[in-house]
Structure formats: structure tokens, C-alpha cells
Image (cartoon, rainbow, N blue to C red; front, side, top):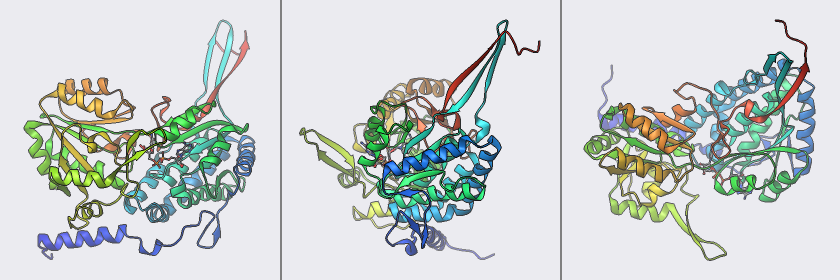
Length: 482
Ligand code: NAD
């Protein structure tokens, strides 16, 4: 067997990674209405028309047997698996964010682990007074707002769940990811046609804007709004006056105590933090490490592709990846620089004059709790590490860093008291123990997947049943068989 030196191995790894992540062929203008000359199905230039089309889709779904719906979902899964590499490449090329291979895996996860019609379960209550049946009914047409960070993944995941529940869907996708999102809308419609469903089952906009979102909020045919995005848009949807499901921002902290398997914790944290360049809202954003294991943890991270920068370099990088914006009222707010979100670690390091190869997948640094890297949801492969003296300090700081989003938190420990105390204190929708963050959405962990984690409105790890409304039917004094 050929023997390679460490340098040669690094070069080979770097070449392979580069071949995945620089889709040069895709560096062309993006069209949100066609792909390689093929007109995308279900894309409209007017939100009212898109809603009418989604309503026709809803009527068609309502007329179907559950088995027919399931056939369409099976075809969506098949096409998603088959076209995952295409969507991954367009996603990276259009948004300039994330990693092609990771996006491919995210699509496969959506295809394999998003629940279908089996998620809709009826309940019956019998007693002296007869039978009461509770069925989970569709809302009607759902208006869905989707993010730039997981664009086609969210469109497909939402479509499977919403169609399984018997709804129609109209999307107002993120303006920075329209072509990718609309490719996914077209995929769902092609699946519908292939499986004998209507030509247009779900609809979207060619140029989604805040105005088209507003039309969606106010349209009488829209019975449910589902929003996956940052705090601004979740607030807007929740104040629409309609029933809304809000899946908002997170800033997941990780605690590593001195009982953890430190080597494994280091690898798991870097694997989770760098997955799709930290775009998933569940990904590790800041670490609180017990002082007595911090050096070992950092060394373990460095062995797994992390590059440690100094405190001065961290401050210099913070000035680039975060920007201050003053609003009309004169209030200044620190925000992430969108040009840095989801970028590769070497690209971010180059901005402060550090040249490394693609084998570097994460930037780590030691900071104090108040550092901007700890306080802001960066969505970049930058991971600040804060040393803590004990579990009390770790929990106190980690809960504060999560900012009450109640989204996701992680812990590496073998001490069940520590694990339980942090889980209780942080109150997050997802709490992952001793694994990379993505285990929390069914990737290497048990349970179904979703790309719409609804913490603020409480649906949690959404699935078909989240998009239903209860209906009760009462038959008095009959229909018991005992
Ligand atoms: P974003 O908030 O920038 O945009 C989301 C969508 O909302 C886009 O379509 C955008 O154009 C639109 N939008 C923004 N403000 C609006 C308003 N006032 N009215 C109507 N529409 C508006 O989101 P993004 O940057 O693409 O995604 C990143 C954010 O989303 C992060 O904060 C991340 O944590 C969060 N996110 C959460 C989940 C979850 O499941 N909880 C999943 C993915 C992303």
C-alpha cells in the first residue's frame, strides 16, 4: 500500500474538499423561474395568483385518499434523494453559504426522516355516553416563509409535512435563495404530477419580498402561517393576527465538564459546529469548558481541523464579521455581516491575513463571556471557548448566552446531575447529550427530522401533525362495542 507523508495527506484532503466546495460551473446568474431551460412549475409573479394556485392544490389534496397523498410523498422522497446533489450545488452557488456535501446530506435526511401521513393519528374516547372521535384536519392553505440557510431543505420538509396533513402550501422564500427554494417547489410539483396528483400542488413567488409576505399575511385563504427565520420575521408573523407557527433564532451553548470523554467531545463539537459551515440553527455556537480540561479540549479540537487564533486576532475578526447598524430611532445594533455567514473557515481567516488550506474547518479562540462571538448568533465556523470554574458558573453563563431563545443546547458529560441541571435550567426545545448538534434533528440520533424547530410557539420538532387542527365528532349513546 502506498505510504503518504502527513503533508501529502493534507494536500489530498484539501484537494478533495475543494472539489466538493467550489462549484465553479454554477457561478452563473440564477433564475427563479427556470432551471437549465426547463420552466419551473408553480412559480408566480403575484402572491394573489400563487395563493389561488395553492388553494387549487389544497382542493385536490382534500379530494384524495390518504394513500394517494402518501404516493406523492413517496415520490417527493425519491426525487429529493436523486436530486440532492443538484440542490446542494445550487444552494451553495446561489447563497455563497455552506458546504455542498453537507447540504446533500441534509436533503437525504429530509427525504428519509420527515414523517408523512403516518404522523396523523386520530383519537377515540368511549364511555357511557357513546363515542367521541377526534381527527386531525388540515388548516387549508398554509403560508410558509423559509430561510436562506436551509432553503430547499425547508421547502421540501415543510411540503411533506403540510401535504401529509392535507394542506395546500404557498411559499414566500428568502430573497437570497429564491432559485434554490423554487427548484424545490418545482420538485414537489413534479413529484405530484408523477404520482398522479395535480400539476401545481405547491406555489411560490418569482421575486418574494416583504410586500408579498404582507399579502400572504392578510389573504383570507391563508389559514396558517409557518415561519422559519430570524427574530424579525418571526415577530412579524406572530403579530399578523393569524394562527402562526414560529421557528426562530438560537445561539446554542455547549458545556463540557471534567467527566466528559474529552477527545470525543472535541471531535463531536467540531463536527457539529462545522456542519454546513454552522448554518443550522441548532449548531454549536459557543463553548463553556471546565478550566481543568480546557487545554485538552482545545488540543483535541486542533487535531480535528480547528485553527486557534489569539485574543487580538479574535477582536480583529469580530470587527469584520459583525457590523453596527443604527436604526431610524438612533438605536445602534450589532448584526452579523451577511457576507461572512456560512463562509469557509479559510475564507474568514484570510480576512485577517491568515492563510490556511481547506483542511482548516473551524476557527477557535479563547474569549470571555462578554465577547461578541459568544453573544451573537454568527452562523459561521467560528467557535469561542470560555473557561469556567465549576458547573454553577457553566450553567449560569450558558443559560445567559442562549438569551432565552429556548432553542437548542448541548452538553458533554458523564455526570447525570450536571446533565439534568443544565437541561432543566436552559429549557431548550432540543438538548443534545454527548453527540454533535445534528443528532438533535435525527442525524445520528433517534427521532424524526425537521428544519422548522418551533420553540417560540411550542410545536417543537414540527411534523405533519403540527400543521393540523383538531376536530371532534360526537355520537351520543351509540357505537360502543362493549
Ligand atoms: P431571515 O430572518 O433573514 O429571513 C427569513 C425570511 O424572512 C426571508 O424570506 C426574509 O426575506 C423574510 N423576512 C425577513 N424579515 C421579514 C419581515 N419583517 N416580514 C416578512 N418577511 C421577512 O433568516 P435567514 O438569515 O435566512 O435565516 C437565519 C435565521 O433563521 C437564524 O436566526 C436562524 O437561527 C433562524 N432559523 C431558525 C430555524 C428554526 O427551525 N428555528 C431554522 C432555520 C433558520
